[in-house]
Image (cartoon, rainbow, N blue to C red; front, side):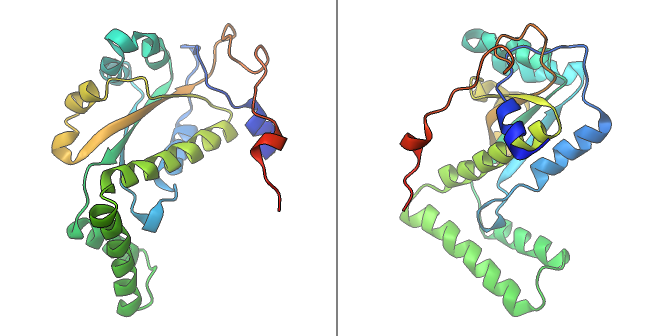
Length: 219
């Protein structure tokens, strides 16, 4: 399947076939997609909770109660659900951890280059923390970068997905003790295979985007 076909096929799934499960091999690829996503200065300000079991999805569904109940079947009937979480703060110890990890992976030929990288990380993070005062929001942006590449990646595997901001993030933060660990939940993405009755599938409902003439300025 080429990129054009993947883009045309991918859509937000509204109804899952609960009898169809993602293979272990595909789940390994899915986790690699999450881990290998780009982020600014390789900050990787994220954590992922992956629910594949009935019990795990029931815990995840605690974020789809009350007002968000319309999303509950998308959690319980999916093969897996990924909760994308963002760091709520970052400090010098975390920046050092990133640099040390890169060093261990062989990215720095010498200490000067490592120190230069570390200085760049601190500089950009410092701009967001002290000048723009949006450090947490900046880190959340990195998580959304991950979500974007993730949706395309799972589509390339022939797997359907539903990104959901319609979740109770406070309930999920409490369920998984995220705030005590320095994280907060942002978006849940259900994964699996759509039911034949899904009204939103591209064979039933054509995709719609704004026209090229409106979206692009070519110079």
